Amino acid sequence: MDIVNSKNDGIPVVFLVGRMNPPTPGHIKLIKHLYEEGVSRNARIRVYLSRSHSSNKWSKPQQSRKITGLSTKKIDSSLTKPWVKNKSYENPLSPKDKKSLILQMLKNIGIVEFAAETWTDEYGDEILITDEVPNCNGIFFARKCAEELQPNLDLHYFVMGAELDDKERANREQFCINKSDDNRRANSAQSRSPVVSADNKIKCIFVERTEDESNPIASVSGSKVRLLAANMKNNDRIKEMYYGYLTDEQVEDMVRKIRKGLNMDMIKKDLASPRNNKRRKQSATRRKRTRTPELSTHTVKRGRGATRTTTIKTVKNLTS
Image 1 (tube, rainbow, N blue to C red):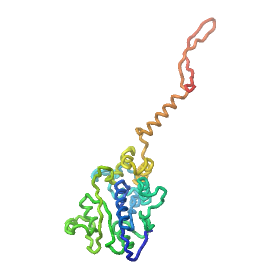
Image 2 (image 1 turned 60 degrees about the vertical axis):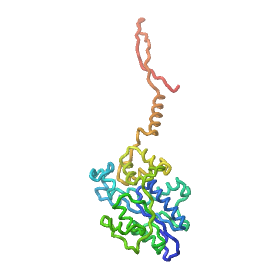
Image 3 (image 1 turned 45 degrees about the vertical axis):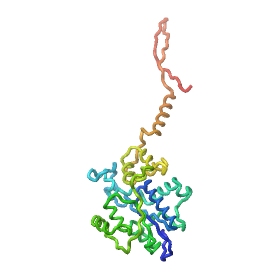
Image 4 (image 1 turned 180 degrees about the vertical axis):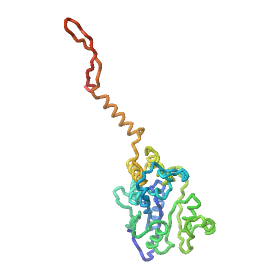
């Protein structure tokens, strides 16, 4: 449970809100920026993870129907290959799984101590929030939770990735005081939520989502990872994307959970992968070492001095 603070103690709150399903290296870049901002301001730091989980939205037919993959375009989708952004399939990981993956990545890049079971700020409070009480699910309620920590909105800092999509940008940035009202009103017709009153706006800190030449995978979206997990025959591409953030074994575990959360069959081991090539070679070597029949010729004597040449099978142990 998040801490509730009913009075203005002068401590800022730096927070972000996201689905992160699954968490990507780009999300970790955002969280790292959030943490640095929070430390520089001696602030309380919060990551409010949404609690949405696909299986909770499935109808009875969807529960019994296995899907075979995900479609990149809505127009090409079907019952067994839904659109990657279909609301019933865009949250395959549970909040607990997301929190665990974020902690693993933060440990692997040295932000969190390897033996730590949780991640806390300098005030000893949990940073990654998935609890149901109080309800901090989604931007609206997450802001309410931040207000419970610090009622003075002048001390709120909302960290978010700079949206490339105009519609989504208009929806998110309506909460920001450091954006043009004229620009917001021009886009408000496309926004899914009404324009926020000026009295309720807060300072926003934008982290660019453009390609980073030093780390080109940092901007890969959760949708892209879901597509790869659902459609690829092996996980090599995902392992490359998460290199340095997750071990190969951790990636394999993440993909299994994604596919389970999509109601898919588990991925079969790719016969072309280096690990399975090694196993095939070992198996072939063992077969060569087994007892193998050979052909040999023997002369068999018969009565009255007659002879017959017969070819028979003998067994030779090749391991000797």
